[in-house]
Length: 241
Ligand code: NDP
Image 1: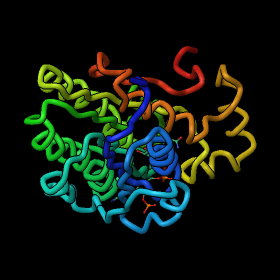
Image 2: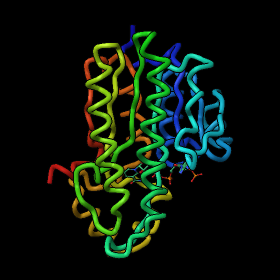
Image 3: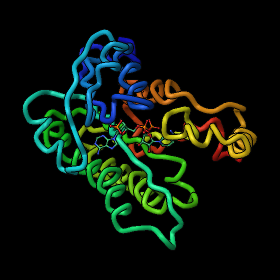
């Protein structure tokens, strides 16, 4: 048996229409999984890149949107990637921006994990991979709800691993560094900020969505069966500085 193969596994990836989620969907598919690309809009491009698989509409403006998704069919791997960011000084930050980010990044993630676990725990096997952030470890600036939500993702990942590891579920997270996606386009377009970031990355380059995709394959595969509650930095060494 190849411990890195996902043959025969079904995976659901949220926010799979673009960026990191798209790269994760493609990587899982290439590793052999049947992938359900979930998004609040169509995932046609991701499906075309995978060459197989399915898509599903899932909009976390309702944090309970995934409540019934796992009851009707067997899904072995859940990747919680969907996430948003809102920027403003802490002193001016609005309640609406607080609620929107916390509902999407933390509340929806938790209740999606819960719905998955209700179906997977009786089977005694399942993998959850949550997408955290450098801001699961650092404070950041002008992103209070994002930082709170991503610290929460790391904490919940550990809690769920504690509760479910003995019953066959692996719950882990990936904390990406600075990755080239739409999310970071404005940063990369600003020469001073872009240089300041690059100068701090020991690996000497920005991350690519594929870097996160390959890590998600590892955390979804039998090769990582003894990893529980890890929040794995994939950041070119940023946090090692
Ligand atoms: P993108 O903005 O490119 O992708 C975010 C994804 O989340 C999109 O598919 C988006 O859908 C989806 N999404 C947002 N809100 C909702 C919602 N209400 N319901 C369903 N889907 C939703 O960003 P990235 O690919 O960069 O980010 C992916 C994840 O990685 C996020 O959790 C982010 O916090 C995290 N991350 C990214 C880093 C980076 O440097 N890029 C660094 C650290 C963490 P839509 O296209 O419709 O908006």
